[in-house]
Amino acid sequence: MKNRKPFFGGLLVGVAVTILINAPILGYLGVRKVGFSKYGFTKEEEIRVDGKLKQIAAYLDRYYVNGVDKKKLIEGTYAGLVAGVGDPYTVYYDEESFERLKVETEGTYAGIGVIVSIDPEDQLVTIVSPFIGGPGEKAGLLPGDKIIEVNNIDVTGKKLDDIVSMIKGPEGTKVSLKIFRKSNNDVFNADLRRAKIDVPTVAHEMLDGDIGYLKITGFDQVTYKQFMDAYKDLQQQGQKGMIIDVRNNPGGLLHIVAKIADEILPEGLIVYTEDKEGRREEIRSDDTKKIQVPLVILVNGNSASASEILAGSIKDHRVGTLVGTTTFGKGLVQNIIDLEDGTALKVTTSKYYTPNGTHIQDIGIEPDYIVELPEELNHKIQLEPEEDLQLQKAIQVIREQL
Image (cartoon, rainbow, N blue to C red; front, top):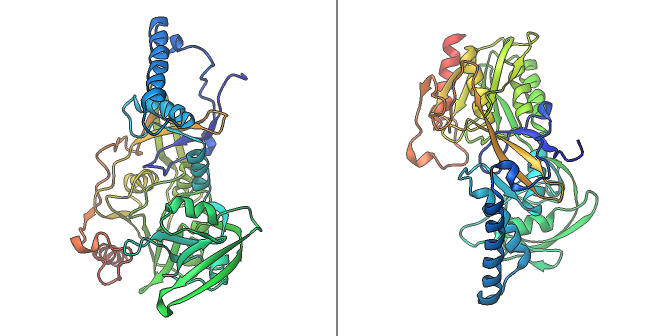
């Protein structure tokens, strides 16, 4: 079996770089190191493709005005081959993008624990918020602070990903930042020691009337523990109803969302998949847990993938009410295949279905109560409770059931 290629992580369903991995369904794709003829290509087609690639590369090398970066040319060839299937979710990952993908799905990295973005007004990398207890917060960094140097290197005008890579590093190592604080027109240096950071993907609070509110922004390796900590805290506070908010949640790890669903659902089917051969794989909940209070799930057009699996299973089992707008509609399943040289493929391998057998691709899940937000609020990062009409409807629905 040494010629078989292992999946990185296993089953995926996701949007963009966000993926849904099912660790319990780890396996092997069984792609053997054989010629194209094994997969329907004739010997003549194989020779013609090989010859044309060499011909194009030669012309580029001879005539392209800026000169050819041969490594980029080769990587682009692999990416183009995969793109030829015409599926936006089937992609090739070079070494850098594959490494970034692995970090993103773990939900853990070594850094200073701040969320950053590029300020559109001055194009400077700006701290949006420091994580509580992280090195950034401990060093006194504040929302709105501008990072202008990293380890004495000017980062103004650099790409955000490049700056983030400079700030990250091995746990325990030091990084020096030069900060501009616009609020008092001050420039200062901050020396920080990188630490292991668990990205916060869950937030919660108790609303008036003992209604628990729990927001999930992604389904990473760290999310189940964060969910359970929040869930138990709300239960200990005596929640009489619960709102789970997966609006703008693009997806994540399948085995994580399945574990969360298992905490809520009665015994039965959570989700199932079917591949090109019609083979069916089921993920089921047991009969040891079921939520005992009225439940509402908040969804919108950016609730995708794992979020739709959670929402769909809750709707089909009739253990909760969906409020908001129709979800994204991502019902395809991908697998990550590690090519064993630092690169990888993400390949669409099957479709997934909600417990009632609904395939939601390009359709989405329609909520029980459709509530639109005013256009001017759709792009607002943080809504005030009184202007969040979807949240207000969720509270109303729960109060009517108490």
